[in-house]
Image (tube, rainbow, N blue to C red):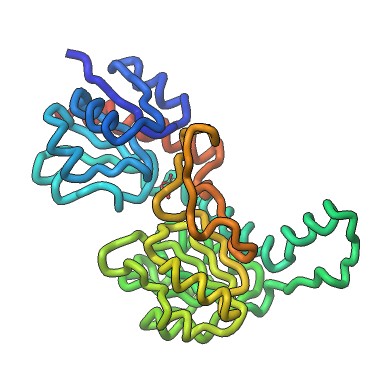
Length: 316
Ligand code: MLT
């Protein structure tokens, strides 16, 4: 019998044609939770990204499910204990978006140091007073990286040529030698990093241990005017405390590629009523989780995932 694959979140079409060679493939983008549960109950394989919650509710409703294929890295929306208990295979593409995510972070840092958004707005308003737009050089700034996995390390690698000071925090760093050879220095706690840095960037997985790791007590430790970047998971930062830190001048700008709950990526603007308390604050620049959104990364992820799915089916 042919496998039925339901794709709940957009992936690059190149992997889809590969899947169609051996399975029936259907799309269910942006559907309601009830529809997710109904369609998942009929599927042997589901493809998701970060929005669909693969929790006990969905898994207990999906008797035919054999593979949960995550088109990307993070698995915080998947109940891994439950999939393991049920013998459902979880596939991910851990290195597919490393370069895109790292380049995106460097872009945000430079963009902010040179006040690009303000400069663009000035010119749009026919205002050319460049003396009001003086930025900062990245050289000699101190940057704190939380998480030294694939993306954190790739960011450190790219930043190392700018002559800035790179400070890293990771409870279990993979490759300390590589990080120090890039000129990075490790601290032994997150709190230790905070008073030393001008820029803070998150590259960590979300776990129950690091949920809201940046909250009021930590904001109290940072220097004024911190540039905050979160391209990892929204749950790492306490939203309410962030708004207070912005009001208090602790944080000058926050670039957030992730907010919780995730916005409806697969719906047109007239198909939803999504809103969020962090939207419409002039010091918070929100992007729709696009750190990995390059053609290069998305093709790589889609093809890799399709190959993994095929291999898993053949081997089982
Ligand atoms: C990931 O976990 O792969 C990234 O956050 C990108 C995504 O979820 O699409």
